[in-house]
Length: 212
Picture (cartoon, rainbow, N blue to C red):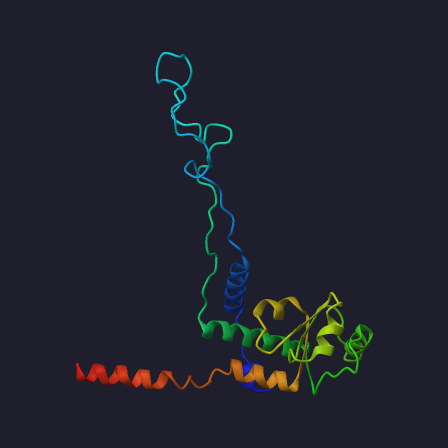
């Protein structure tokens, strides 16, 4: 395992920020109350302004009336908190490195099951000495693993590109195959090369600045 990815220092503030962003992104934000302009009802003035002895009223949809609109109620909104890629990857590197220092990260050659049997999956975890909440990282094409683990409440199987900061912190134990570890390492490498399409664009902008 690369020290650049699995040997990073613990950064609690960065991890805290990443977890907050993860929770915020999970909020649906679909709640919405009706204002006086949204509820159904006539807009006609119910009775004249003066002379009846009753309180003045303009509309049956007034928030003062039963069945009227809601004042300052919650409205649908986007709760997500965009987090820069470098911060997201840095938080994952820090959390994974801490799990490795704790001795709670296990790398195996492969996870192969002849049949999708939950008993075989639980037995494999017991053989590895993994108890409690466990995160298994392997290819999502491993159908037998997915089927064998889906009935185990304390275990979760994700692909190398599906690892997130919350799962790493929530699950006390992590087990990943060598191929998944290599893919995750390449994904989180701080020296990861920029996409091929970005360099020409940067060169063009530099040339335009020089021409100006």
